[in-house]
Amino acid sequence: MREIIFATGNQGKLHYVRTILAAYQFNVVQTRVAISEPRSEDVRIIASEKASAAFRALGRSCIVLDSGFHIHSLKGFPGTYVNYVLKTIGIRGILQLLGAGKRECEFRNCLAYVGHDFRKPVLFESIVRGSLARVPAGGMKDRFWSDLYRVFIPAGRRKTLAEMTDAEYWTWNDIANSDSFVHKFAAWLTK
Image (tube, helix red, strand yellow):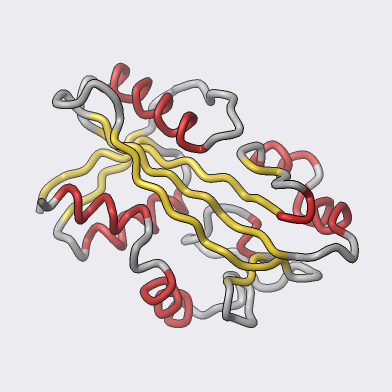
């Protein structure tokens, strides 16, 4: 198996990326590296800057991942500031802001790969569409990236990600996200 260094402290992201890349015969190794979080409303800019900083700190090829959470009726709020919003008002605060408004939302994900062969990081993106539940449902699991899994209902489903069994989650993921940022990265890397 080939090794991929993943600069992250998020265990849910690590689990997700590791699980998918294992099917492509890649071993994902977590490395924690202290890098500042760039400020931008664009996940591509954040992922790119974080990848470049991680590469400078590690001196070797690596990947980073950044995500935003966009609620359409709130004009894209909280976007890339989702972690700050979750720390301050939490998912219940987000649901209160939404009120009776339309509940469509989406995750925007960007994986950035950087190495010695590239002048700038190579980016792989995908969007996961869905809606917000009226109340949080389901318990936290190791594979979760954040508390949003308790309120995010993927398009075409009736359960939050947290309510799904592991089998339901991976079945949905395999169908809905077959062209996700991780699959795009793996396809690019294996060419």
